Image 1 (spheres, protein in one colour):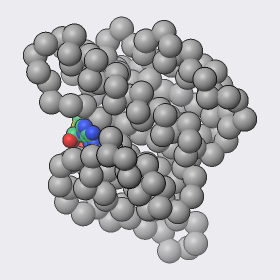
Image 2 (cartoon, rainbow, N blue to C red):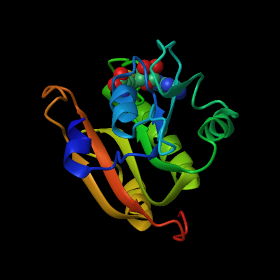
Image 3 (cartoon, rainbow, N blue to C red):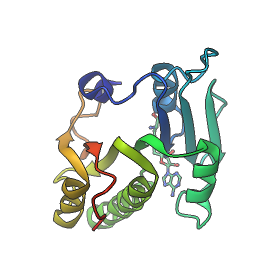
Length: 180
Ligand SMILES: C[S@@+](CC[C@H](N)C(=O)[O-])C[C@H]1O[C@@H](n2cnc3c(N)ncnc32)[C@H](O)[C@@H]1O
């Protein structure tokens, strides 16, 4: 909510993918802001995926699935019915307590999320992903800067101060740019 208040990527009618969506806080906000339940023909769409079960949310299509499964990208695309305007990823594997391992796992999830975003986003689209303090690594950041007009690292006020999580916000997807 705080990220969107600042960057305004959840526009009415937008199509959103929420990766690592359980228990559903982000999906709920996204569904409201894109007007996913509107009946005027201008409704947005939200597709959520998580390893965990989620309670139904009005206007949100929920996939109970591992995003890293081979068929996950195709199933998300099918549920979306086309390209996306926004890809959100708050995915995080359970912490092991080993800083280095936790960092590697979260970066692997972010990399997979970005890979999917580069494939599914429409021009002008946005990618929001969870990273750890220190931010996206050089290579990933270069890829983001190459493919998006604006790339920022943000720690929203609701994110616990002692937690190492921050978010990368990438806006203005350039569809024609080579992904690498
Ligand atoms: C911090 S929580 C997300 C909270 C959510 N944004 C909300 O507002 O309710 C992180 C989620 O990522 C999910 N997750 C981690 N790895 C995943 C994977 N490979 N595929 C799908 N979901 C995954 C976890 O199950 C967990 O529910």
